Length: 109
Length: 115
Image (tube, rainbow over all chains, first blue to last red; front, side):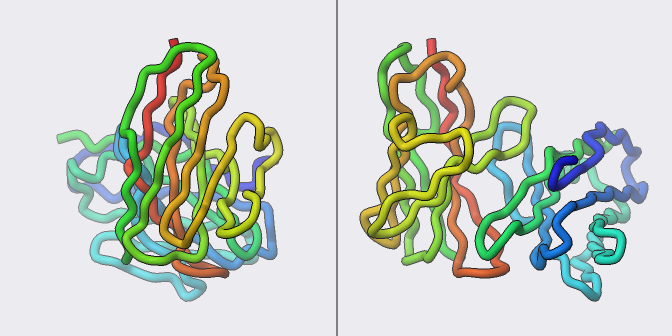
């Protein structure tokens, strides 16, 4: 089993729709969780950290479920510019991050 | 947050040659990392660049192939040695602001093609 697993997609979603991704992780001792966004041929950029209580940043909401060991990302009112690959990232130990393979999102007009 | 720059942004190299990639951060950072990303794949950690000591390599990566330097808290280099077509990839450096539960921030990456 991979340490971090994501549905690779692609998710084809009409503009304005709501879309959600899940990501599961295997290390129950993980403490840090992040969602990154990677545009084609670009470097990954931090989208948001994921906190135990869940957190929201504009149209983006992240949730953590420790019991089931998954994190989720919800995007509301999707925009064309949201098209990208979304990477789920979980820490392995004090400084190492484990990267999911990414979920590709395509927003269609 | 600190700004990180990486160069070269891309290169095309001959088989058997070596290339050194540089990564510069505009302020002192605790941790610096080197990753490889194959086309369509996620990031694979090559090594953690430790200031003042030898880098810590991940399974499958060795110092002879990927020597790393980190002479101070703002700069690191990765050399891809004796390159073969299998080394064609994107190489990324990143840093984190401290220990523990900190996210990492990336340079623009180096797109490397080996002929």
